[in-house]
Length: 318
Image 1 (cartoon, rainbow, N blue to C red):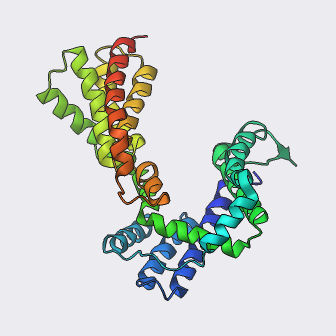
Image 2: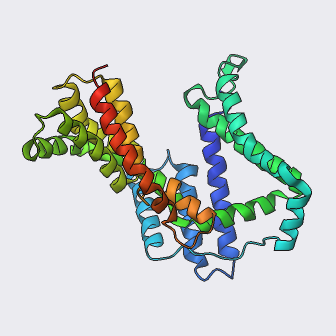
Image 3: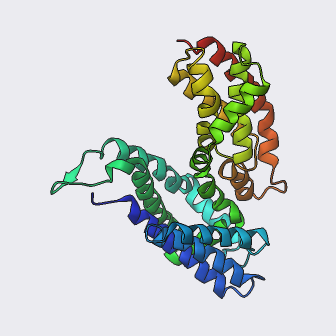
């Protein structure tokens, strides 16, 4: 392929390295050395991830966790425009300010649908195995260029704003990256078998409604703990979904999997561990309560979880 996903990893790594350099030079940051080290280590994961031995990559993530855990990632000064300048720019541009944001989903959809089979000299234009992600990367770059053109800003100012946003998000930026591998780790550790042993030993799974409830509630609870429905799915599917719902009650695997993931998403709504959904928006909006998003979503999540239990109970054999 011409545009591979790895190229965008390098772009992201270069941006993080620039953030680290800017943090190091920021004398207004009380912990500029530790902040710079944190972002430089994260940049290393993207720039040399495949070349790093697994142990080295693990040590890098542990070091990042220690830096963040001891409060080593702090805010600095970002060369922002004054409030009057921002207000004037917003009034001048009006709804055009939405153009860069809209470019990202539009480019992603166009790239993943219309350009999936485009080739030049026998090479795919976009990485066919990661079509959506590559299209998303292209859309993000187009959005940055368009934003600079609309606001008459420089790429350096765009990097300053990127660093300001990343610093406000802090360690939450890294959390989805770490949580993404939890499902695999728990599967390799035999967590699914352990869950199956516990639920069959202490809960009467001979009642179909109980089995369905255990599966759906377990999906939600594991997601609350791990912050990622995809990490919870192999545990509960391997422990209850496949051996009990499919093996004993002959549930349709597609229905079991789909409603199980919907139940997991109910857990996503109720946990700060799902940082990209619940902590990041609070940071972006600069809300005084970091858990404000979670508190607003709980009254919606609980009825939805009950609805998923009912749906799986009645639809599992379709």
